[in-house]
Length: 157
Image (cartoon, rainbow, N blue to C red; front, side):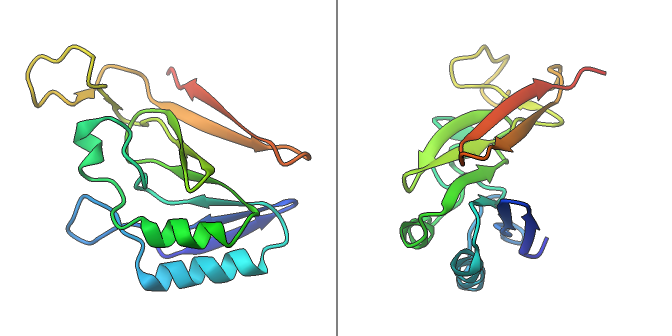
């Protein structure tokens, strides 16, 4: 997916391509970071920045090894743009909330499978995912006060 920007009343959504062809980990290349810097510079409303790979460890070893690598340039860019409201990611197949560069980092749940957390029972060491849990979605609401609230919902067929 190429980088994309979408504007809605009171909100800018920047979608960054963090994929690395043939690899499981993510990376934001110089071209993407320059594009994001321009989007953030021109934005006149709060900005949500979304990409696939979380830029921090989530304390889930299976996913932590294939997260977004070389995240410092993104952190440096973030420091220059106070209207960057939050980061939205996926990849981890578990709903999670953390912070990155002083901003909320919200991780979407899995739509096909859910990651087993390190303390959950496994049939064997490589048993990383629950295939029997329902898919789930994250709904993000940015209100008029600039407060971001996220609701997580299971999708039961």
